[in-house]
Length: 78
Image (cartoon, rainbow, N blue to C red; front, side, top):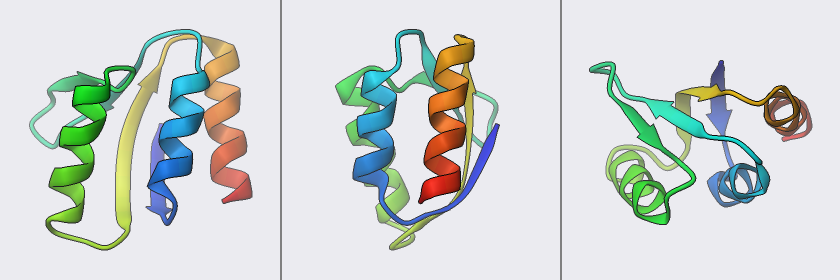
């Protein structure tokens, strides 16, 4: 799923932390980073904010249907 114009990345990572299953960030090169890892979260944020003040677009993969719902709810309520 793609998230666009994420203005509150801290809240996004709170939602990701609350997910039960694996949530991955798909990079432009097609690599997948496990966003349940604090190190991956830190590196992702550092890379994103070195270029932009808000996140224009992210591609995430969530494997648990309940986690997908959480992420969709986040997108709709942000």
